[in-house]
Length: 604
Image (cartoon, rainbow, N blue to C red):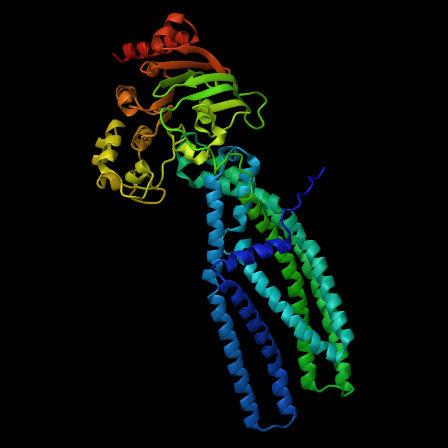
């Protein structure tokens, strides 16, 4: 059963008006150039059509050589002016049109960067983002190519009007039949060519699969696995399979286009044959001269081109406006969080309270967090432990305001965090998450997250506490060393442990009231990890902190430990209290301790 198509939110006229408003907002030259180029296009085509008939008329009239040469020079200068002017103005359209598209790109990027976190978990939002990206993808994207379409539509409409007057004065039926046959050919071609457009999602699927399998062969991320496991032949087979699927799709599309081109050729033959018959008959009856025959026959061909251009332009404009509608729909995507005019944030000290909080991820069958009650006191160092899937990271996201509970409330000093401007609320936190956000920028910029001049003393202190200062000092450019080679060939590739230290330095430099650490030392060796723990009090001095770790030994320095299980708090207390209780925390701690003890003996 075919899936019902969703009607676009915005109409063709609404989307054209939207683009015109963007152009009027500081880029008016885009609109003026569309008008000027259209006039030059029509003038150039009309002048080219007039050259041969006019010269032939001079010869037929027995005018002298001087008149003939004057006419040739005049038409030559006119065509040079029209061609040169059209080329000049077309060349100068680039900057304005690109600037309008760039404004839209910036708006889309801001939407992606600033949107509410739950939107990023919504596959519909991500798909909408991808569709909007198609419309701004280079000068062929709808948000830039629409100006070419509007210019051509305007030129074709002006040309159609001019040629219609010319042909109607000769033979109204010839103009009518030419129009009907042109429209018929266009409609048949349109129906056949729509197959490719209707199956564009299928084509995109094949292209994406082919691109992905190509990346498997080229990207260094996969190089080690391909060589170690000897799967080169398998990857090549996947690539070949995807290529064959795409080739099969392309052949189907070409078959549809072939029949359209064949029909178009037949209709063109009939149309031109009719024009020849009518015009030759008029010449034989001496109703028109040979030069007029040439003029009118050229007008028939040109008239057909104008009609086709109008119809094709309308169809192209319709497709482009569908893409532009996707852009506007993405920019209009509803934000579940409050981002302005919220309640003012309270002053320190900060106390957070979870009241009967439950949360379920979209599409999940069960809650990840279930009826959880928790109070985090100001300045408290809280550790959260538990097995995979217990809800530790989700709890952090709820606390940080990335997610809102499906049931219950998260309170800051007694106020539901949904009442605050969420971006201002984020300023209370700094965090090291499991997924690192290393930027292809300098170490200084990665730590400070700013292009402004930093507090150098504070920056070096953050690197020292994170255990990265010695590494940075050993680099040729120290703080100005570029990180990663994604952009800069001379960039430094940090190890996993060094990257975690860099992220920790970022947290220390920011010095937010609340520090969130989700497995911040997972990539560190035991000695380096222990160094971080010894400095933990200094790192979090004066701030609240929430620490997630699978290594239970690392939680001993925290004021309170929560053992999460099945989305709720199964055990709570200090390390000594939980060990004395002999529950699951103590059991898991003993298992880990035994492992490390046996490892130490083996090393000895």
